Length: 180
Image (cartoon, rainbow, N blue to C red; front, side, top):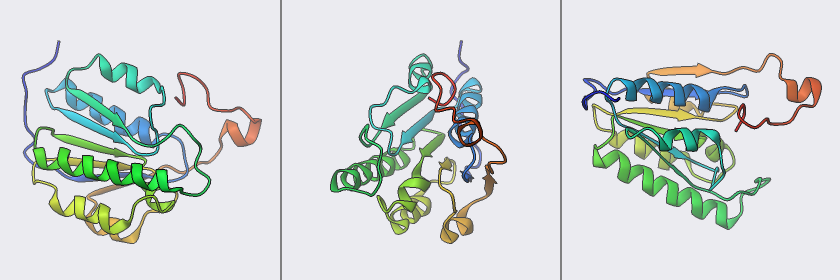
């Protein structure tokens, strides 16, 4: 059972950044919590095109949480034209979602990696932050280094720092139900 639709009194900008595990998971947790209070959430996933992540299936069962993926299933070593086209589509879609004012929280998942890899430009991201309506919360995830321009706009920045990871210490690869 979901609560009656509510609206945020104030929307801020949150950034979950860094080389450690948990950025997308933190954004999903925030979104899940918000839907439990009647808020509407939209997650736009950059560089995760049509990949079967567990969160996609879970979100399908939540009427207040929507998601759309952009990108290809390929691992990107260096950006190709198709990657840049997908990035542009994701940015246009994000702009439309933000301007629609239908959602209280908009999550731009892996946008930091898309910036770092040159799939999208920082000025495009800054435009999204500048057009953000007052009562919409934006959550940005991904990346190893936060772009200095983003720190000017962010109200919260949390760095996920890897201290130890079983991938590098034990050679354990991404696990079904845990990392995807």
